[in-house]
Image (cartoon, rainbow, N blue to C red; front, side, top):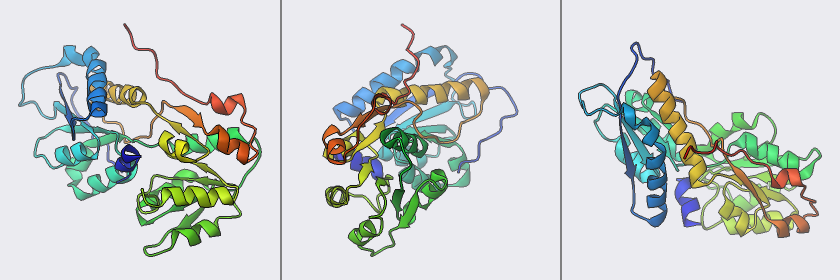
Length: 289
């Protein structure tokens, strides 16, 4: 849960007139935990195929690519004066957007990310696979999560949590909905109220589609989730594309994922979970040996 809450805290794509050759990569971390070391070790191995393009000429413009692992590392590299590119990972979309907004336009244009949380489109698809019939879906967003609304594309009723609002009152307002699609908005969900939200929705017979596997283990119905290797595979692909084309892709949600279902909650909600929901996934291509 600590890792979950850590992750809770648009980009103009630069045009390049000349082809680019030769890059130096540097992985920046915000701590020395076992999980962070695992992320960095796996990512460094995935960057090996690009090592033939490494050069040591530091004067070349924007040949340094920083890989910022987590929000602490992202804040660090975003504040540096280096003329570099930044690819962030394991940071939520909300935190990434806040950091990008707090820096200069030039720096923000040189930043991109693979977000930590599931893609809303994949979560909506999971709802369809779980229920196999039309259901009313609700989502709750705060002031910092308003950007989620267009991503839901009218598929969910969006309730806003204004500053000072009681989350329980908002939960009661969405009682007619069968599903709560939880978005990783720290102004709505935090370590103190997640358990209360899960209990309240459970009493209302609502299934919660969480934004992490930990949330499902705590009592949400289901979610798509990405392993370290899934995120790192996408980050490496993003770096390879930049090296090949000189174009930095816009920030994006994870494209590789698996699904976890809380079978006990599903039974309590009288949901017959089919194989299509359990196996809903998109795995990265196998790494060459």
